[in-house]
Length: 112
Image 1 (cartoon, one colour):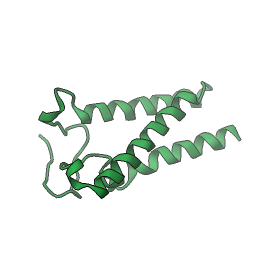
Image 2 (cartoon, helix red, strand yellow):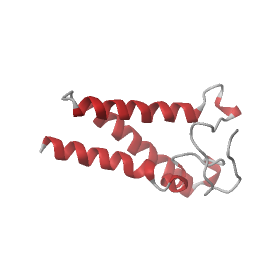
Image 3 (tube, helix red, strand yellow):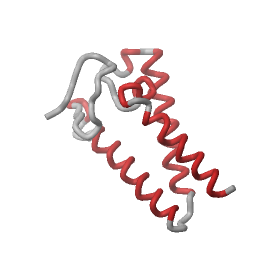
């Protein structure tokens, strides 16, 4: 059961948001996969693995949030339905914006 609202500021969990226009791709599941991969990469870096994949994943997330956030603020028609990255993640307490920044700062601190 999806929690949906026409209000752009409403909370819509990414794991249950499915768009019939997506051609079979479920955006919520893709984002869930990205966050799961990021978490697994954090665990690997903690155990001594290379940080480059986590850095790339975080940068992709940050660029996506900034791009979709800006487009959703400038042209509401570009994203008629709220997404995790719409309005810079405002519907998700800005976690999508803060998380990659915090990970990048954490990586910088670990290598310093």
